[in-house]
Length: 183
Length: 212
Image (cartoon, rainbow over all chains, first blue to last red; front, top):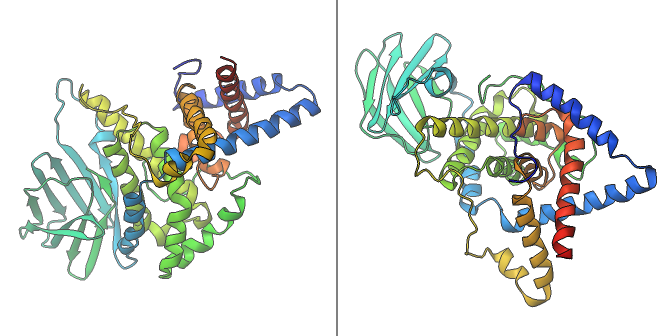
């Protein structure tokens, strides 16, 4: 860390103020058109050099590229998408001293709500309004695991999702899939 | 503000003709074709946008394991949302901002857990050579390879803000300023001046290295 260790500002007001500062500083650097052109060319050359370095030294790992290609199978226009409306990681205040609180998630698709609690040991959840359904935990384009659901739409699984997961629910004629999330 | 919702974002793509502009004009059409079932269009999207998503992951310095999961989550969600994206020609910005939000979530979870053994800032200086690296290790290219490595090293030492900006800026094909804005949460108007400052700072470091 040398001269510029501050992270990007996260808040609007700061962002605008600092953006203004940058403009002024950029203006200060202006030193006549000729020198500017040369500098700009040197910038462009350096940027291209960095681009090559990135491609060689830090490329997208092949297996990840393949997973993204396979993800096309997850494209399903017939399913309804249940959006994440609550995530304890983002929306809940941390409780002092509690470091292993379960992750609480709520998804909503129209009138249907799905509450899910994820722990290291698995997940439990509830479908609202209460109704029976078939529910699967998806772990990727090729992985789907059925979970047990009772007639009131309460479900549980002993296996904690490893990595990204989504739930696929079939209620009567409807198919609902929750937004993909990292557990 | 949550990740992955399909609002049309506040990121305005300024008219700008970087090298990648040509590739990017196709994005809207590719998204539409992929919605219609064209697997080749999906492949083109993955090939064209993967490096951008990856650069945003890397800019946030996640551990490899976390970074891999974020990358997957973003692509799974993109596939899931394909037919629902309101501005298909801005799919790049959608991907970039979704990646950013997922990265910030990971970082937030880490600060909550405050695990001392979590390898959050593990940057791999892997000994395994990729084929490309082996290639540039051939003798005639040794000088160039050395310069490439120096450049990468100096980038690491540049300070967080410049490192983040430059890492995303140099994805291939070059992202638009709208995409960079979405990737890092900075105003489009500030990217140009910041780019200039960071590149000049990097050049100064390379010069100093050469002189030493």
